[in-house]
Image (spheres, rainbow, N blue to C red):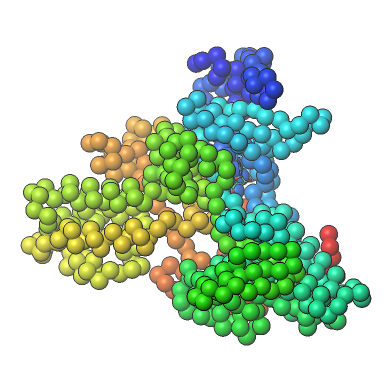
Length: 567
Ligand code: FAD
């Protein structure tokens, strides 16, 4: 091992840290010792991020042959699906977070946490550069570098403002726990300000106009939470101003919740209409001022402005600067997120893995691979396959690309279904031939329609579990590979590719009603789904501690209502 590696391992409790001085630009190598040898036997895994992907990787990593260094500016895991509930005090912020040290301390693996953010990834030297959030003795923020054998990038994404003027300065994001806390305080602020005797009615109305930008699940859930808060608690506490409250939901496309089944979209729009939430679809925000928000009618092109008291921005996610820089460095600069293969390895980068919102499996590569599988199966170059060959090909593709299988199941492309029906059973109809080009052109729709896996906690946590399992079985699978034969020359691949299992999604709509879209296009809307929502979210908590806190918050809210104090 090189001297630099020996030294780096020792400096911080064997976790692989080395001091890096900004001014001297040098590495402190004064502390090498006996531990070095012992530590060097272990592979160093650096995990960036303690969100859904990072935490589920850490929770499931069980092999003690790794030294794990966790780096994240956040020393806790946050249960993001409950953030909208935090904005109105339905659930307390402390109930949705679990200290990351609790998660890593239970492990047999040597894992160390360091509160810092990664500012640069250097894949050539297998190093990440970090800056601590904390200033020690007022000397400025500490910088250091960490060596790795394996890097797991799980830094998530940031809010996308689309560079629309005023968004950064005047709107509230709903991405982190701090954002939810800020929103909660500001909502109450608006009511307190509107209750002051010196204000005109017009000013009161403006202050109590809440605008939500983005009709996705988060924006819709926040609108529903706010509406419930106003109707269940505010009416009692601020009787003088309660009638001035207005909630507007702006969405640029034709419908809200457009990633859900049409029945759910229609129900949500109708319910919001009944509740008095003003849903403005086809309305794109073009500028946000201190007191006015300007929107453009997508069809007519007209621009109008409306006064507002508080605006919440929830329109989607963008790339973090450190990832953007890394992508440029490795030739992926034209992409939105890091491209990985199906084993979650960053394309072209050995030993660097990326999961969660900061990465996606490269679909273009998927299509090229699918084509290659076809041509390989077409041994006589006739451009056709027998049904038996076709079945093989289809099995190969679906095994390697679970998204394709999901797509085929959902979309039921008519010609594919016919072919599948034909080929069902034991391949008796072997004489039926399948036109490769026709089938491929049908599949090419997969490329445009299938897009990427959604940026959800479900995908991130399943990827974390998958990758941890791969790491746990790294050595064993080297000797006894478990993946399909064709992926490793003539031999097997070490692991099966990542396979996403969609377990369904919820859209809470307020008034104790939730829409649930479960696998198999099963849709359920109403009070019973709300109970399903409660049980799923209680069961998905990362610890018994947060589970108990969340459930007791729900009970407290049922009995005493929400707390409207400005703390
Ligand atoms: P995150 O969970 O965002 O974690 C990223 C981690 O990286 C954080 O710990 C962060 O501090 C750290 N980090 C950031 N920058 C750096 C850096 N430079 N160096 C080191 N570490 C860094 N999904 C669902 O499936 N269902 C839902 O109901 C749902 N509801 C949601 C509600 C809200 C309000 C929000 C915001 C999201 C919701 N999502 C939901 C989406 C889900 O939260 C994300 O898809 C998920 O968090 C992605 O996980 P991740 O690990 O990739 O990123």
